[in-house]
Length: 109
Image (cartoon, rainbow, N blue to C red; front, side, top):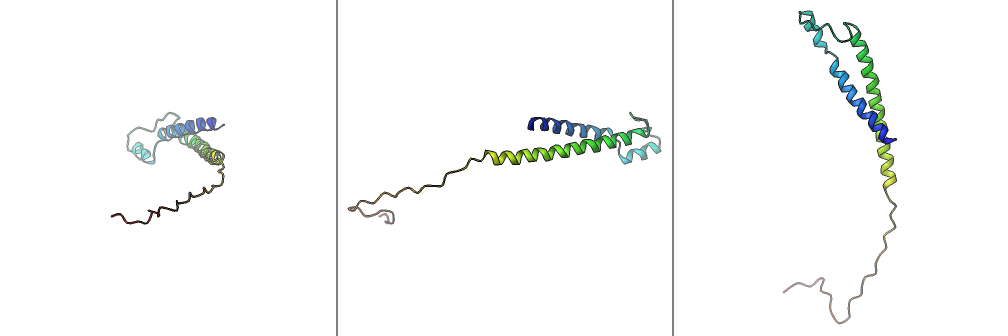
């Protein structure tokens, strides 16, 4: 299931980038008014903004939903992979021999 969400996520991301690049900016209308001639677009003079804007909004929503789905899969996978740990056991400390003094606090000569 997570694999399919990844596929939709990547496809939605590429499609959003493509649709944003197809749209013309607000400054393009100013250039068309002064004779640059970019008003003839792929979808016609008025149809491109409406179709591309709606398609971008739909794909952005798909991208957002797949992002939430991947975050959910990531959080649920992190909880499942953590193995329960056993409580720590204390090991007995070996006793010091009676004939030798402890050298842990001795100052070297």
